[in-house]
Image: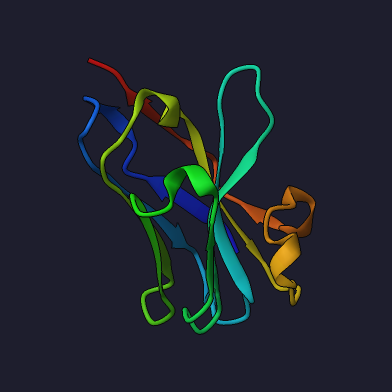
Length: 126
């Protein structure tokens, strides 16, 4: 299965973007899907993750209340709605997926994810 991320771009502070990740096959076997981001000179960090049924999610503290992750198993897509964007949200955003059954505390470990999209640039600047 290949993952294709899209939806990045340049947006002003306070604006919104919606990232989408489309899988080339079924995502039903993926226990967790997630969005990570990596800014220049920084490590890749979890932004948000969602379990298979969509009922369990995890967000990094800095995006809580502003970002929402969603998953559509029928359309084989996962989305990240980003509102109230800040300059510090500027990064390359990657979608990722794993078939492993993760525990909550490991959602943020990039090494637990087996499938990665190519990344999409998000730039928040006036």
